Length: 596
Image 1 (cartoon, one colour):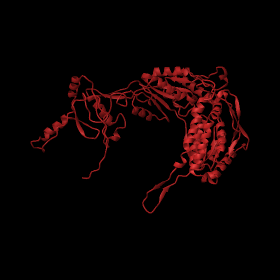
Image 2 (cartoon, rainbow, N blue to C red; image 1 turned 90 degrees about the horizontal axis):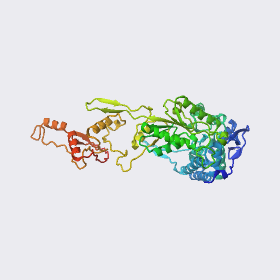
Image 3 (cartoon, rainbow, N blue to C red; image 1 turned 30 degrees about the vertical axis):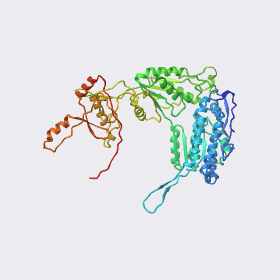
Image 4 (tube, rainbow, N blue to C red; image 1 turned 90 degrees about the vertical axis):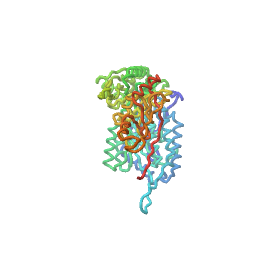
């Protein structure tokens, strides 16, 4: 990777891109674009107004209905998109330099997490036009019913400032692959790479009007796109507040289709047996990567109480050692916040956390050391003893602030030898905290129980273990359709049945007949009754006594087999001197239809 300090930035023209050429805004408005790391002005970008939006939409509508874009084959469209992806990849360092200066992120993050994924996204969707296929539906009667997939029309794409190049390509790729035309509005804070991509579209050979770029403020430019009657769809990434306005504008005009990618409060979950070093590394970059300005940043971490103190201390030490500074310095790990307003927002959340009783372990203050006093730098903050009702645990901060909460175990029900049900609860914690487990299924259950947009789990698998949990406890389940719907939770009927089996016979296999004692110990089978009722083969009463004395269980295939009694299990374990062993295999459920 080239040292970015030796590169010279190449800025795009300070004009709007409408109808395949760069034009001046009709009212001549401008937007000052500054460097967040130095506070210096980079250039003046054009500011589009309602008249400019109308001109861009008319150009996009003409290209969609009357231009060569509509009659172009799917393969030709794919070649143009691929050419655009190749040009972006060839000039990735040029784009990353402008992105780093405009956004404040480090050059490494700009090239690896923004520009390169954008080029990869366009390359992926360059192969999609030939995969768009229709469908023929069989219906009754003399009808020929089929489905043809057609482009929606003119798409308005509104892009935020945290990943300008990557998110722009996310919206352009599928729209262009489907045959739509696009009116793109980048954020007023980071408009430069969008204008540079417009230059590349000219070089790639896109027809006029297929791509139009309009930098401008949300009001009036974004509002005009949302309310324009010739815009058929709006794809938006940003805040919930703006999304509500888009929904209202769509309902009041032509009921245009909407795709909304909004914020979140994604949790990171660390179990008690997780590898501490790996968990700290994953959670650290999960929140402090890209300065915390990520919609799926892991801004809150739920740690099991047993590992909480050690984990939080290690994470705070790593945050204190993080190098914050010049985004073009290869040694810098975190750059500057995108604007002064965003810096004040982050500092405001830090104050709210301290006022509500959270303990600040590291960072949280503005970094004014040396030349950083001119920029929008803040030290990464780590909070401990955060309660779920606190503001920093509830709201999206969109900055380098981590809220750590100690989680509790699930409430476990146990039954004493006298048969009385008892309930015990360990340390209290957040109501949304999952139970600690090493199993893959436990990680999925913990993630699925959260209402956040994204959740990540950190766990450790034990090498050489037969069970996926790395332990010796498995489950035996019935493979019948009648009980599959009752195995949804720990308090279901099937789970209670399995717990009773564990207390009575110890551990047993996941599927197959229950087996206690050494592996080579024979499993007693039920003696089959012979003869008819009331004959010499046995009476009805003696047969019922034998059935009650035998402890039957269900195998995975649904057949009944006999397991040894509790006393025989104890004698066998005492004779062998070993712990309870498990054996069993897997079975496949099959259903048959019979006729009586």
